[in-house]
Length: 409
Ligand SMILES: [Mn+2]
Image (cartoon, rainbow, N blue to C red; front, side, top):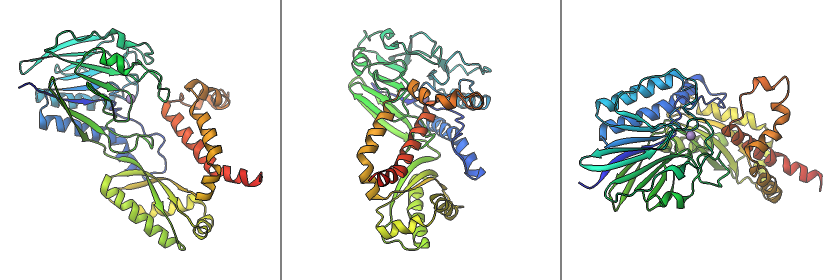
């Protein structure tokens, strides 16, 4: 045998609070709040069933630096199951669950190795083959240092070398840049596989060797849409075969529904219901944004008679009780002529907004965040808050710009 088989996962974000989700019936909200655990259980069950040589978890096991007691207990249970199944687990902690957080400690079973805050080499033997893992845990939340320079190059060509690294590409400003690296730097270490974490979008940065973000195992908001899961990797010295295994309990998504020649509300509701049901059949329980488009003038006039939030309420009611559930989080009616007209101005404004760094966002929001009376009720600004605000900006522009242009004509 010359192939090792392992599971690569990251960003479990156990016990994510889904605090931006409002309006859901409480049973659905509970389902959503359980979703990170459901996804985690699917990961554990899969491992127990398929007995990989080992499991890698590359940072952000917990969503909060306080590592909620419940999340730790569930994680502990999962690790015990793997212990009983004789599956070793190697974990690093990331920016969300760094080692300086204040938490009540659980003792993990002996099959679990936790990487320390220094880049560490862990040798293991898998069915007679030598494997060396390299990795570290975040000592504090903000690790801006180029930790990659501390990873030793592989010298022994007969061993499998795997790097575990929670961080992002240098120069990629769309995410908080932690432990930055370049693809060239990773390649220069001559490892057989780079198991990355931190970016929640599943992606391969390189094929040879594989440099891979598995993404998170459960989406947490509209910007983490689509199927989520982990990779099962079969690795030989000459080849790597990656299989994606889905785990999401609830999927976030976006549906565009063309509405031509709609003259009555019941027609519209029927069209939406059909589209939403077929989405749920394909993707399971979902939280979706619906965009109504392709309106002719008469249909646009028909929609304008009723406020968008009333339309939204109506469609939510129609979907009530359907299994698997589909919750419509947002409804937008896009008038194509407006969209075209405002495109270039919108792009200019959004381009500006997208160029803001985290600090610039804080400056822009300074009035609110530094206000004597409001500041103490606000939680610190997070990356997902910024994404949500960016989304609100886009919506506002889409709705308001045409009116502004109209007035100034
Ligand atoms: Mn993460």
